[in-house]
Structure formats: C-alpha cells, structure tokens
Length: 259
Image (cartoon, rainbow, N blue to C red; front, side, top):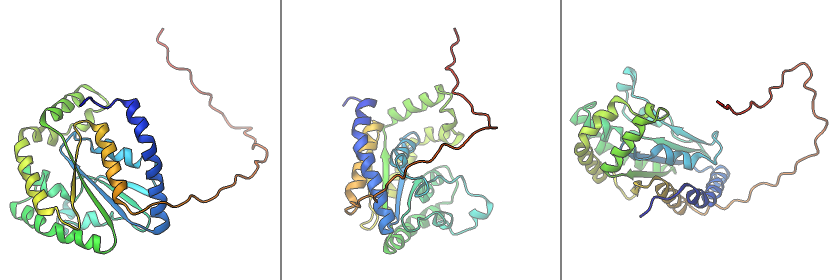
C-alpha cells in the first residue's frame, strides 16, 4: 500500500476535525470525562496522533499529559498516584502521551523497576481502570504498532534532522538493542490488561497519516451520539478603532533573501 500523501491526508482529515470539535462540544455540554491513552514503541507516531486529535480543540478543554521520570518523592508514592492527579474533570479530554503503562514497558525492560513491581502493576491495572470506568470516565487505550524496519528508518530521520534530534534520548538508543524484550513485555502487558471494561485497540502506524485517520475514526465511532448544536452567536457592530498613538506598531518583516 502506498504512503498516503499529505494533500490526500488533509482532505480526509478535514471532516474529522469537524467531528472532533462536535465531540468536544458534546463533552462540555454533558460533562463527559474522556481519557485517551497513546502507547507504542519509540517513533511509532504518538506525538503526531495526539496533535491530530488535539489540533482543532480548545487547549483549555483538551490537554496533553506527558510526564517526565518520577522524582524521589514520587518514587515513594503509590504508583498510580501521580497519574491520578491528571485525570479529567467534567467536560475535559485528557490525552496521555505515554501513561501508567510505562511500568509495563520501559521501566520493566530497562530495569527501572523490580520484577515484583512490574508484576504488581499488571495485577493492579485492571482494577485501577475498573475504578475509572465505574466512576463514569470514558477510557480509550491505543497501541500504535510499527515494524522494526520502519522504526529504524525513523530513528535515522531523527538523527539527520536537527529539528527532531531532541526526540532521540539515551533511553531510545539503548532500547534499539532490546527490541525483542520490548515485544515480550508488550505481549505480557496486553494479555494482562486487555479487559472488557478497558480494552486495547491496536492501530497500524507504519503509515502514520493513515494511522491517525484510522485512530480518530475509531475513537469517534465508539463515542455516544455527540450531536450538540452550537450556540447561536451574533456579532454586534464595532465602534471606532481604538487609537494606538504612542505605541510602536511592528510591520511584517520581508522574507530573508540571501541574494
């Protein structure tokens, strides 16, 4: 299958943007609380998928949570505690750029937690997520799949692109040598945490643009009927333009021309 071109993607994405805005309007009207978990290997395309979902939405309503590694105090807390602090209130949509599932993946494979801690996580997570769902939160969990060859290609692109170099961390580079270990960890995680109340959905992200469209379409299809008519707004006539006397008004700069 050919890679989806940008213009074709934008044409297919445009009506989905409208549906996402309608979804957010519905959430605000009904007080729905929505969590979307984005997980996958390094370079899978989590950031692009999150931007595609959040792009047309009000950032005051839809926020992204991407936590750094825990500090010393957080390491002594109940594992889910720092994630619970970011759960949505009424009308909010929270997108987790990686989530509590760090413990089943990078922490386990890289030795940042003990085998006992990893095992406890797999046992506790279905119960934790059951509590979220029982309280009325709409929880969606997506795993973005990508082949090793595609992952290596994207690693090389990040290395060559100075604007993407920051995405390559020492942990990412070390993870390249543990591909099989990550695969085993993922399979164990899916087996333990794919439940009726909080199922996983795997999306093919070898073509990231197709993956974004597929993920958004699935998300919208699984939500209740989100049709809420927008409020009527009437723009009143404007008065006189306020004076800017005494202020410096910057003019647009000319494009840089090296010639």
